[in-house]
Length: 171
Image 1 (cartoon, rainbow, N blue to C red):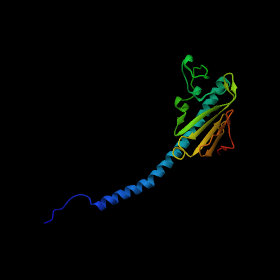
Image 2: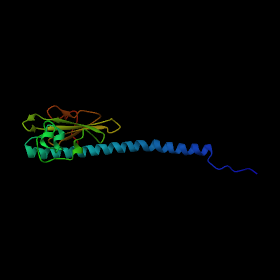
Image 3: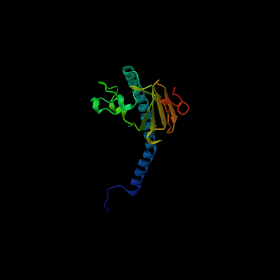
Image 4: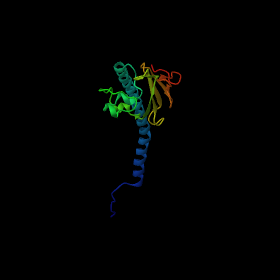
């Protein structure tokens, strides 16, 4: 009488591995696209939040900040970053002032200097790793205009202006 050996055959194991590989091939790109979409939606939302904070800052001081960090810093006057006035209020959460957030690198381009700040700004967000963390670049100016372009594009021009040729307005 033959003894029965328990376990899986090589063929059964190959079939299971093949099925799991097929599921991974189908699922990973979908997850990557969903993550990029989420990064882009969060970036656009946070750019608008920063614009609102900058507008509150302008109403308080009569000018826009020279640096993004000025909107989020609340520290004793002697410990403030250069160019930030001494205030007893913070205009936004400090995490929104991070230069890299949600897979995007953010750059603040101030407008022309004024005694307490600048006359405008442009905030641009470029994917940290193109086609992995995002596919589009964004720029938002002091007037609240949001522009976008495919690829890693500088959306802000000098003087704190949104470059509408490089980054046309979103509708």
